[in-house]
Image 1 (cartoon, rainbow, N blue to C red):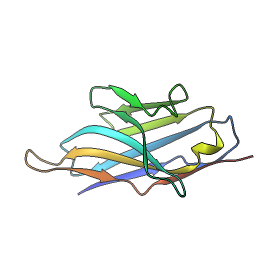
Image 2 (cartoon, helix red, strand yellow):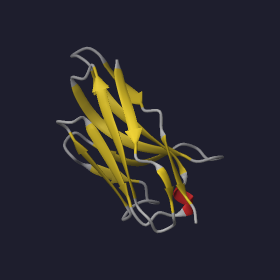
Image 3 (spheres, rainbow, N blue to C red):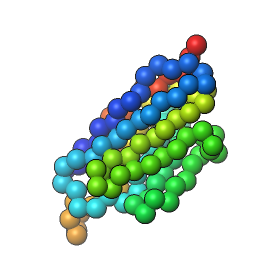
Length: 120
């Protein structure tokens, strides 16, 4: 089994910054793409940012230029640096990872989520 644990959420004023972390542990052979999603009340889950094992990144248009995704393959960890936060960034942020546990076992795993609230 694979576990993902997020941390770093909290309450921040508009214009502020937060850095989210997601650490993967357990039966890990290779981690492929790692993603950050968010789920706001009354809205569909949204893919915020994605990073491949080789470091190629993609972002939702709504966060381009403000958020930066990065990872450390040796530590099985992905981060999301969020700057210039807006109230509409308020959501539960969830980490997702595409993981192979062996040559024959591969799946996508979710963390429990961390709340980010942007409010004055």
